[in-house]
Image 1 (tube, one colour):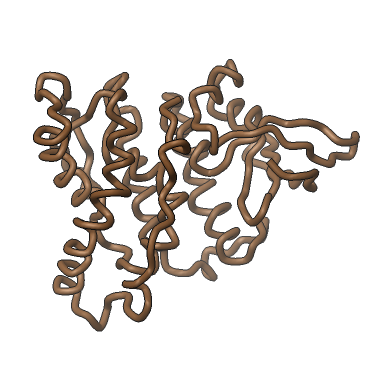
Image 2 (image 1 turned 135 degrees about the vertical axis):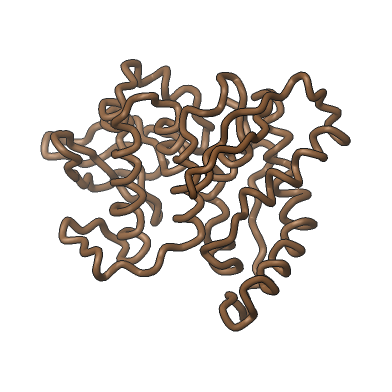
Length: 269
C-alpha cells in the first residue's frame, strides 16, 4: 500500500471506525470493523481475504505513525457476509447507505450527510442491498453467484452504473448463465452443488444454486472472460427493450470496457 495517510475517524454507535483514503479508495482499519462484527480473531478474519482486499499501511495519528492492518470495500463486504451477528446488517446499512454514497458523491465522508440531497441509487447500490438480503443463507463452504458478483462490484461498478439502469436484475442473468456453464463446461456434478433458500426483494423465497468454494476461481474467470464479453451485451439489449431507450443509459457507455483482474489477482483465500 501507499505512503503515510492522514487518519479519519468516524463513529458508528459507540465504536470508532478509522479510515484512510488511498489513491481515491477508502480503506477501513480491520480491527475496528472486526470489533463491530464480533470477529474475535482479526488476523484469522483478514487472512481469508484476497490479497488486493487487505494490506498494512503506515498512518499518521496523534500518537505518531502507526502501522495498521486495513481492508478495502470488497474486503469489508466479505467480513460482513461472514459475520452471523445481528449487528452486521445495521453496520452494512451504515456503510452502504451513508459512508460510501457520500464518498462517491463528494470525495469525503460528511457527518452532516443529508438524505434529502442524496442522488438516486445506482445499480451497484441496488445490487449490494439485494445481496445482503441473503446473508447467512448460503451453506458453509459454498458460494452464490449473487454474493460473488457483489464482491466484484468494486471493479465493475463504474462500468455497470454507466451501462445499465438501476432496476436491472443483473444477478439473475449471471446466475442463469453460469448454471449451464458449470454443468456443461466445468462438468460440475449436480450432486456437488446445493440449493439454498434465496430471498427476493419482494420477500418471496425461491431456490437458487450454491457452488463448491473450489470453483470460485472458475466463476471469476467466467465472469470476466465469458459473461461480460459474450452474455452481457444481450442482457443489456433486453433491458433497453424492456424499459425503453428513453429511460436507458446511453451515449458512449455501451463502448466502455472492463479492466478485469488477472488470474494472479484472483486467489481464493
